[in-house]
Structures are given as structure tokens and as C-alpha cells.
Length: 388
Image (cartoon, rainbow, N blue to C red):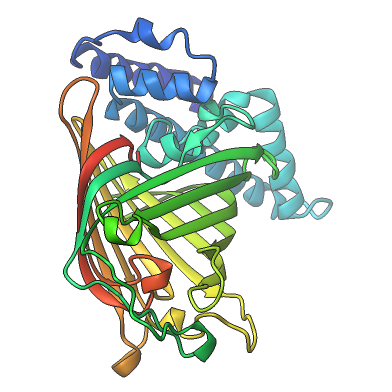
């Protein structure tokens, strides 16, 4: 007798119990009513997440249910292969496909359970990976951190930006101050959902960061550098485990980054970027290797990969209103071409309506104009939105 149909609803009830216990021992929400009036589904969900806090138990229950559904599917597959071994009229592959198809058609609970693995996790909250987390298309969502630093200081101003391309090298030093302001805006939206069955979402995103010499009255307070970064990404949900971490997502995208300026200050490049994301409880880890699209002889910055790098990795910890992230980049080369950078960010609550943000950067490529300039930068200000 196959006990899976009996055990599966019991497991769902157990998962609900875990979820209920997580809610029972969580702090009472402050004012969830404030979220009701928000029209956007995505922003309203983000509001509830912030007020009610995320419950790790919800994700653990979803993972346990999905794992059990996977065992059911594996058992059905093995049974079909055993039966097909003695039946010449149907191959093992055909029988497996038929039995699994019947299983999921007759009881979609199994399919839905697998599709909801990771519901409520950090990466799911960012990319709507689980079936029940999807909010549809054209909902504006946060992407990279959104912040304002009234003070952004460096130990080494880059007064003569240079490049191997002689047309992109500044001859006369610019008069810059070591302290300026910096701000960043970033958002994304999903333009297509479930392109491959119940998986595969297509996102577009835009990020803009500016460095403003607001204290440099002698030079009319110019914007020293603004970087524009549109991109398109195809994101897939995963469901594997690795050393206590849960593999949640993989993605592939096309990324353009430029500063929109003319020679000799023009800088730009195009990349194809792969993403691999894992998380566990309050932690998330994302690795992104990339390949630069060649630009030919008129390249503004032909050696940018040897400074800004060929891959980056980000580790995030989010808990009790505090968010720490470490972002590292490297050229993946040795010798004279070995360069990289390290960036630390800390978002923290100041009061109920205001958050602070501290950023420390050391290495190459804090901005495109400084892609081959090594320096340390420290910024302090307010945060409107962080990684998660």
C-alpha cells in the first residue's frame, strides 16, 4: 500500500503548525493597517514584511513539504522503472513520464509543494521564486540599495582619470575635493512570468548612482560622476541543498553600464552575467561571474576587466532591522593583472521611520571613471531601501 497520499496531508498540517508556532512567538505587529492603503501589490507586501517581520519557520515548513513531495516523485519514478523492466511494450522513460504525469494531475498538491520550496526566504522575497510568492508582472520592486550619503569621503581623489585609449585620458588635472555627496536609485520589474512551465521569470532593472561635489563651490558644485546601469535578467527557481545552504536561484542577464559622457571622460562596457544564489535563515550568498562583450578599437576602457573584475560575490546578513553585506570583486588573474575591491555596507534603524546606512569601499572601480584607480571611500547617510 502506498502511504504517501496519507502522509502528505499530514506533513502539510505539520508545516502549518511550524508556521503557527513561528507566528505565536513573534513580536506583535506595530501598525499593519498602514499597509492596507498601498495600491501596488509588491509595495504592499513589502510593507507587511517590514511591519510583521519575516518568519524563518515559514520557509522551513515550505522546504520540508517540498522535500517530501520530491520523495514521492522519486518513489513513483523508481516504481515505474521496476515495472517497465518486465514490460517490453513501454520503456522505463515512457512509464515514468506517464506515472508522474498522472500523479501531479490527480493531486496537484505535490506539484505545488515542490514549486513553493523556499517560500519566505531572503532570495524568495527578492525574486518571487516560490509559486505563492509571485505577484505578477509590472510591479515595481526594489533591486539594489537606495540611499543618500551627504558625506562621501575618499583618501585619494582621482584628478586625472586615464585609460589605455589615449582619447580617454585627461591631460589637465581636475580640481576635486575629497568629500562629496553620493546617492543611488535602483528598481526592477518583472515583464514575463513562468516562461517555462511554473518557472523562469524575465526581469528588467535600472540602477543609477551619482557622486556630487556639492561642497566644491569654487568649481560650481559639479556632478563628478554618474553611472547608469540598465539590465535584463532571466531568473529560475532552484531546489537543491549544499552544506546547510539552500540553492534558491540561478539567472542569466545582459548588463550595460556607462557614465554618459564624452571623451576623454567617457566610460562604458556591456556584460553577460550569470547569477547563483543560496540562502539559509538570515543569510544570503550570491555569486556572479560575467563575460564582457568586446567593443573593438574604440573601447573607452579596454582593460576594465583587469581592475573591476570578472566576477563578484556578495554575502548578506539580515535580522532585527539590521542588514550587513560584504561585496567582493576580483579580476581572476595573477601578477600585474590581479586587482579587485571589497565593499562593506551596514543598514541600521535609527527610529521607527528613519534608517541609517554606512558604506566602506576599498580597491578599484568604485565608479566607472575610477575603474583603474585604487582608493578607500567612506560614506554615511540615510537608507530608503536595502538588499532585502
